[in-house]
Image 1 (cartoon, rainbow, N blue to C red):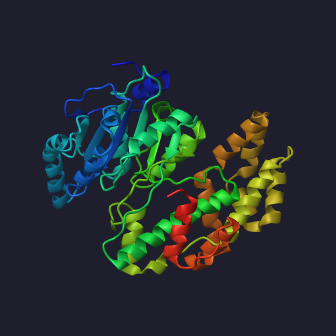
Image 2: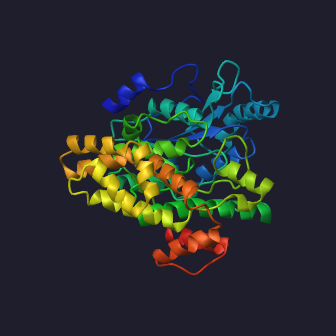
Image 3: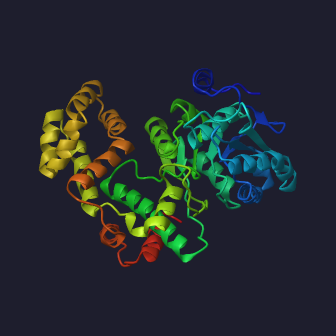
Length: 421
């Protein structure tokens, strides 16, 4: 097996997961990439995902390992445990049935191999991604790691679009276009439409504000180079939001670029396995009403944009001066920055980054996607409460030069068009 690059070798030595997990299914290789699929009680959905992958061209499939991580905690329900046993028993059958010669799996569900307490999808992704590194071909360049979910379908152009993207871009990470599949009933459809609209409007607002973090962070729709994975510290172990924090970190070290040429199709189903995210949001809306999911007011993105412009035009101003400038934009913005310790942080950045481009990169490393989201929460909680989508989306679409629709379904379609799906 070709030796990994120095960053990957260092990562494997210091930060990768180890026993009790290993790859099963007689892995070959080396591979130019790996598609990693965490799987918890997905015996009905996983075959559909694998079948959609198998529709990709055979020559591309031959270059990618497909690695399923069947996982559960020790407190998994009897139903989940039984379903996982079915998956582990069926994977060799599905490998033959779908002609996926490079389909392999990790047993993180049997006794003695379960995930630790309070762990979940983040660790399951990490197990698969870390183990896949050992089967990649580093002799031919920088191989690829791709994240997918066991209830998500891909198109026949999926692998070609991913390979083509990384052949033409310098960034280490990619956000893949997504479009949730139709729900089984009108209530479910209304819920998933509203949630996807929320995700898309948030990214549109960041784009209009000039944030470098204006990209989607969906766990079943992201990919990166192996080197970027290693340098960013690998996948985190979060129970939820692991995708958000992972792509944020990849962007800091090597950039994230939107990918084109394919679309992945996540499930619209409700779920309460995680404390937040698509499944939880849909489940809560179905249980308590869609009006529970409200949107940020457009003025919040105006404030964010003015703040980012203020920093770009700093002219050597120290942190205290920039906070005074922020106060002219909004006293709530200034209060947030004071609480976050911006003045001291900025003065340190200014002192250690005489080059302007490095200074801006360092600033966005501090004022990252998480701190941006915290600012929007702060402004919403203290001055501009969230509103229904009809009051939030239209003004942002107009600023993007695409106003018109006022109902959720049509606004979602307009945003899908704008964002390439």
